[in-house]
Amino acid sequence: MRRPGAGFALDTARSRCESFEKIRNSITVVSRLRTPYEELRSHLIEPTVLELRTPWVEISVSVAGLSLDQRSRLLSEINAVIRPRDQVTNLLSEFLIQLSAFPLSYEFPDLALGSIPHREEFLEEYVSDVFLTPYSLAKAITESCCTFELDISFLRAIEWSWDIETVLEFSSTGNCSHDPVAAYSMLERMRYAGEIGSGKQHAILSRLESLLGNNESSFFWEISQHLWQTLHVTSLCEWALSPAMTDHLVGSYVAEYLCSERGHDRLIKKVLLELPVDQSTLTTTPYVRLDMAALRFASTRSMCALGNLLGSFEGFSRMETDPLADLLRKSSIPRAAIGLDQHLAIDKHNNHCNAGSALLNMLGSVDRATLTAATRLAELNFLTREHEALEFKTFGTWPSA
Image (cartoon, rainbow, N blue to C red; front, side):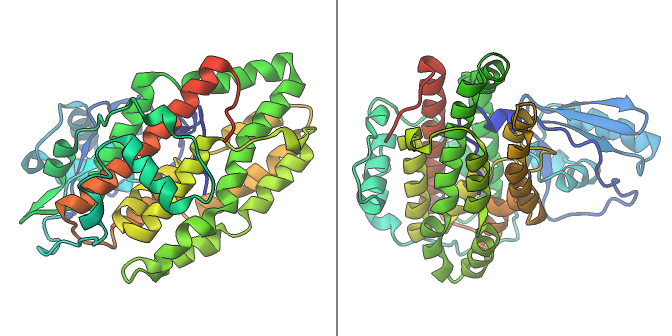
């Protein structure tokens, strides 16, 4: 489990995939259709290589398996305005499906899902009041999952801003049912677009790069502070997720996921031990603590919310290298990058970047209340990380819990 920290969600997502499987000549009819995000643009950088760009991701894809006519049509369709479901061609959809690990496209709801939606019973007592504001939701989370006092006052003046009705309308399968995977594809776009739009996270990596060149001791301390947050996440992963192992729909998947996560904290500790930093000076931020408490809250109550949070925690783990490892390789202690490289390799091997959508695929359709609650938990997660990035960018210091 990675949880992109302040400043790293976007930089991670800008990684480049120079090689990808060829798109099949025979385009088959698929039950799940995809259409590009509004921000997606594409052009040919070589006769058989297509470059795809959004403000948050950039990849290059071999299209040697397509005819010249198919390449031309595909390029035109990607760059066109967003299309309604009945205007999406199989060529475009199949291409985007093969790139579904990357945040490039919406997934239309699967109309073949059952008409009896999955409902999470705990919502009866929570929907009416707990989800009114980010603060009221965070308060419920801390009261339920924290044995210590956690400062959530930064949420008092914040209101919800994500458009719930748009998510519900897009993901509707009819009969008051919603496809959580379709909703997830829209929430991913909201999260990435929000990070780009606010601009709060850009300065962090630049700050580390500047410190590396001008004050390496401060660089080592600040990168250790980032890693300390990751250590907190990896150390509490089992605590946060184990309640979901009893769920009849996703329990076995969560158990398998947890098995693949065990030992990740040792890899982060290995990196920290390499760095000349007094670990007693490192602190866990209240934002990371709230994120982990929210994950526990979801895993005991809502598998739909859990899938969305899991996808956010895993971030965009298809990048070729870890951005923190890249910086450490440029430092006077390049061997410190080894543990981060191993962490990323394990995540890639276990396809963790798709963990959220894989879990959501097991749920079938969900009802309005379930999807509303999941969306609010996802937005709270976004708000928490944005505030963490803002505080660090503004003050250049790290808040402690």
